[in-house]
Length: 83
Image 1 (cartoon, rainbow, N blue to C red):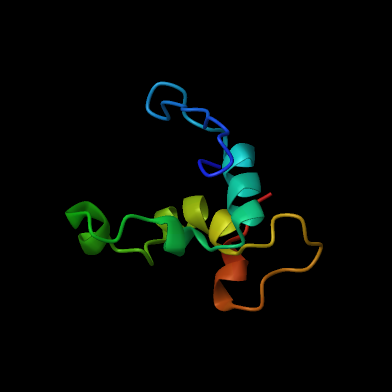
Image 2 (image 1 turned 60 degrees about the vertical axis):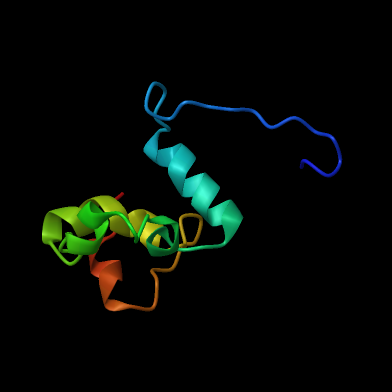
């Protein structure tokens, strides 16, 4: 962290996008949902139909927040979990 004097590692995610597994791990480590991570102020995200089946197939394994659990999330989106 900046207070301890540790220099952050800067990664250009547009040039080197993280893998799905990297994203799952990062989001799980942060203890947040994908929805919390999304840029809600960007017009594209505000106007995006988040309940679209194709969108959920991409986002739900991350959104469920249980990538390391043997049990599905306790919500209807768990139906969209993909291995």
